[in-house]
Amino acid sequence: MVNQDSILCSLVADNLVSDPAGARGRLLREAARLFREKGYERTTVRDLAAAVGIQSGSLFHHFRTKEEILKAVMVETIRLNTALMQAAVDAAGSHRDKLQALIRAELESINGQTGEAMAVLVFEWRSLSEDSQAYVLELRDIYEQLWLDVLEALRGEGVLAADPFVVRRMLTGALSWTVTWYRPDGGLTLDDLTEQVVAMMGMTNSGA
Amino acid sequence: MVNQDSILCSLVADNLVSDPAGARGRLLREAARLFREKGYERTTVRDLAAAVGIQSGSLFHHFRTKEEILKAVMVETIRLNTALMQAAVDAAGSHRDKLQALIRAELESINGQTGEAMAVLVFEWRSLSEDSQAYVLELRDIYEQLWLDVLEALRGEGVLAADPFVVRRMLTGALSWTVTWYRPDGGLTLDDLTEQVVAMMGMTNSGA
DNA sequence: GTCTATAGTAGGATAGAC
DNA sequence: GTCTATCCTACTATAGAC
Image (cartoon, rainbow over all chains, first blue to last red; front, side):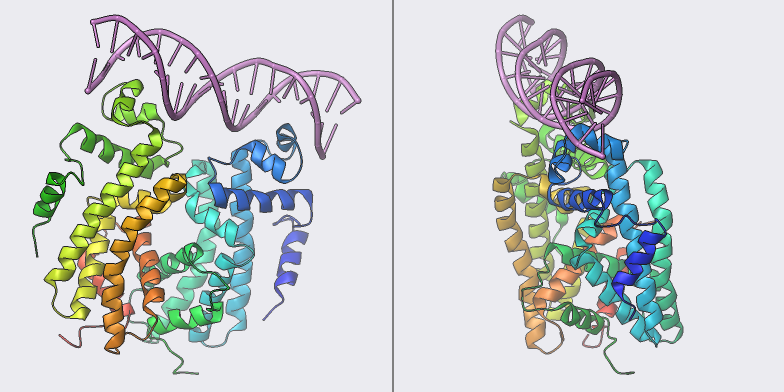
């Protein structure tokens, strides 16, 4: 498995994701936290500014509108997670292992560091302008294609009984929803959870 | 299977759910539609009033606050769907059939008549005041217990490999998420979908 | 790049006539 | 039970000094 930090570093170097230590990166992290906690509409620019210790007017030096902040949170989150997913797929051998790696990686992205931003992606979608939605959807297609390639391969091998599109969508819902109930300190690790999902899909470790 | 209309009628008679033909019922249906479409925060009281053909001030003769409307949408939706679920469970024979009936009924509630209100329940949760959240949670517990009883029975029979709580939560996510992608005219019926879910759970029709 | 001050607007809710 | 009129508050965004 490739180091996650090195993936982040190269994205930062390419200017695709903000440096988490920089001013912009810090604001986006706080924004994700607040949007997740209170919702985008209920979070004011004053809240956002206060969270990083500046006045609300100063925000507009970095972003032209409040919505641009929401868009940036979503765009950077997808970019980062697509890169992480790609690495997870590349590192796994069999298609079955690739699927397990994807599930594990998505659970990590939803319940780990980027969890707040991933939740924003799910719950604040409608607050994004139509233009921004179209742009984010393009990025999301790349991400989704990673899943479909693996699921279709499994389907071809006869391991998967259901339609890849339906399976992916069910998985999207099931995995996203963990954000509402999963707690790392609840005696269930993300590895446990991954195993339960794989088990629920009738794909337990028979081929390994 | 008990007639769904008769269940609705008895709830209306007991004053647990508003008559859909009455002024209050019509408003709640329009409210569900708007909250689902634009989100609760972006829906103004002027929008709500216009949707039923009155002025915004007149709304406050029926509800004291805008949030009370959101609460009413959620409360009545849970009451109705709990009753429908209960009927579905009672009508089925084996535990496996009860589970299938629950899945079918939840897909119906999410993608049928009450779909908009169910989506509101999922996506607008944070817009509810803490007091209202507590009240709705109590109702939700009754609903969830229906599922857990069936899943635990299946677990006891050795048919279910995973933890009932985890399974229910995965199902909640997977089924709720269908609201974002399922379209009845897409060549996939709700019965098809139910079967795929049951199949994905490794519980295909072996015991029937 | 951050501050202060404020323009401009829109929303929730109320009052009182009919 | 609905209308009109409007209060009051809170918000996004801007302007210009430092």
